[in-house]
Image (tube, rainbow, N blue to C red):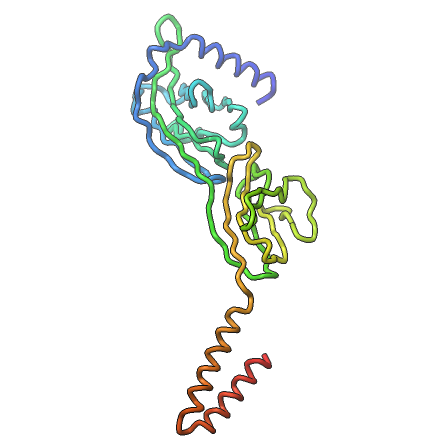
Length: 275
């Protein structure tokens, strides 16, 4: 669609909205609950045939709103999207013509949380347009939460989940302050590297001081994800194994065949530590 066509289309929508009979709007409606997580794709259910069975598919004019704002509007192949949803919302035409007016929202954001209402715009009396209410949906979007345990020297891979992730902040286990670690557009360095294709950030060569909480934030400082990182003591398992070996050696020393068994265990112990 050209810019001129888009402006004309927006003008038609504004004109249509001014002629809508507000008495057709619902006073109360129980919304359908839909839950998802940041970065996912979600479908808000809707079927226009349930409320307007005689409507011709070719003339189907559908509108989705988060009152009082329009999110998406479509008439035939012409469509309009709200600025905050640009490139992220659609009602597939082939499904719309068969009665399915469900709204697909891609790359869902925390800010998309809210109540959505769908309407069918139809011809009313005196050539006015009337909105016929179809469906109310309550969308809840939550952030990602996880825990990780890594060793010193390991790399921490942080999923950013969405291109709308803007920053990563860190709170040390011994501090209440949040420190800015990364912002979108920062150049890679020795410790931090943003993948050139995937939405992930790698923090290299972890140290004990890196233990704490990591938060991925969007442009509005809303949480995309929260990661609790624990740094494990690297040689803990080796010390436990050595203690178990010592117990076996002590036990062998008191047995009747202790000289032979002790010799075997000592040889086994030396082989382990050579590797």
